[in-house]
Image (cartoon, rainbow over all chains, first blue to last red; front, side):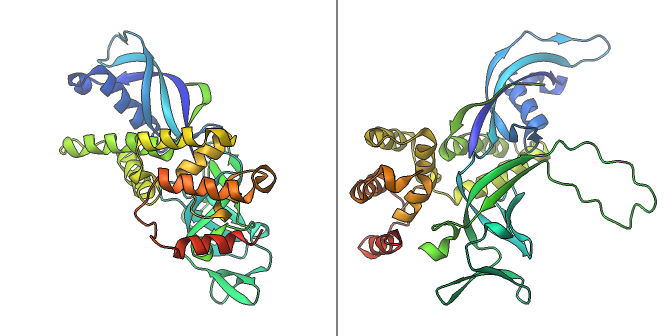
Length: 195
Length: 143
C-alpha cells in the first residue's frame, strides 16, 4: 500500500524556522510542500521519511530565506496491481461503487467488476449481490475489501478560465490519481460476507 | 523537483504508522504552532485509517519473527507485505493474497501458514475457541 520514493528538491527554510534543528526544519518544509499531494506517476505523498543528502545551503540577495538542495525519501501511498485493500463504501450508483480509505477517496469499483449476479437497486440506491437466493446488500459506510486492478494517473493541467456564467455549473475535476478496483472474486466485497 | 526513484522500497502499514505517530506527537507538543493544514489533515485521516487495521498491535520484532518463520514458504515480497498488513484469519483471505495459491500450496501448508500468522501477530479480536476456525474452514471449503 505504501512505498518509499526518493526525491530531490531545492527547499527553502524561512527565518522563523532557524530556531529548529536544520533536519527538522527541512522535514517540516518537505511535509508542507508535499503532504497530501499527488505526484504524477508516483502516488499520494504522505510524509517525509528521512533525509539522504543536504548541501550547506545559500541565501539569495534581497531575501532572507535559506535555500537547501536536499535528497530525501518520502512515504507515498501507491498500491500495486492486484493488492488487496480494505476501505468503506462511500457512494453507489448504476455505474458502480465508490469506496474511501479516509485519507484517499478516489477508489472506483465499476459495475462490470461486481460479483456475478449483482445488480443496482435504484429504489434503495445500493448494489445487491444475489447469491444462491440470498440478497446481499452492499450498504453505504460498510467496510469492503477490494483488489486493485489499475492505478490511473491523470496529468491535470490547471482548469481553463470559465466562459459565461461561472456559478451555474460547479467544476468537476477528474482526480489526478485514482484506483480502479474489483470485488468479483471470492473473499472480496463486504467484510461481513466472509466472517 | 526531481523523482530519483519512484519506488525504492515497500513499506508495511506498521512502518507508516510509526512515521505518522511521530509527526502527530510533535504536533501535540507544539500546541500553539500547529503544522500546516495539509499535514495535520493527512496525519489525522491516515492515522484514523491505520488504527482500524491490524498494524497498531504489531511490533517490529513480531514482523521480523513472522518473516523468518515464513521464509521456507517461498512467498514473494508483495505477498509477505500483504500478510503483515492484512493479517489474514481465514483461508479465503490467503487465497486472495497469494497468486496461484492452490497450485503452490497444499491445504495443510495453508492451514499451517494461518496458524503461524495467528501466533506471530496476535490480535485482540481473535476469538478464543473453535468458532473462528470453523468459519475459516467453511469459507475455505468453497475451493
